[in-house]
Length: 118
Image 1: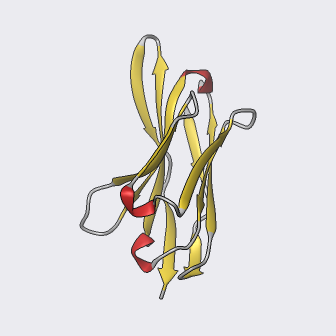
Image 2 (image 1 turned 180 degrees about the horizontal axis):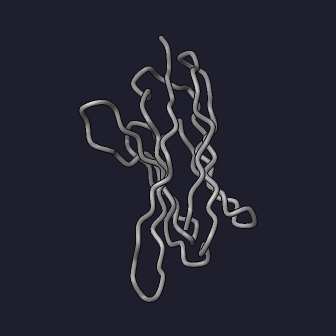
Image 3 (image 1 turned 180 degrees about the vertical axis):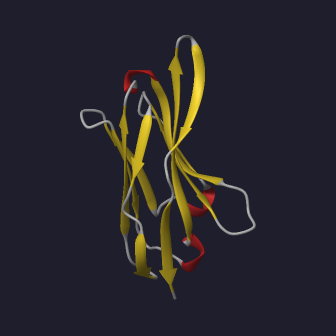
């Protein structure tokens, strides 16, 4: 599985951004796709995830503002971020957990920078 993330940028507080993450390769084995974010000096934290069955989960800090969705036909996951706050600033990473040859693997995409100005 390969992941291609995009969509980051600079936005003012209260604005919106959408982050797409396109998966390629052995996508039929993908169980969960997620977005994480990381700020300098901190560990990567889960922002939102969606399972192959469509179940979603969100960090408390983004509930009601962010929405994760997946387009199975395009093998793409989207993170719609609304009402952005300066504390949402960070590097966002796409992640996929997938099953292959009976084992579970985790794959990271390249990070995309999101900067929210106050």
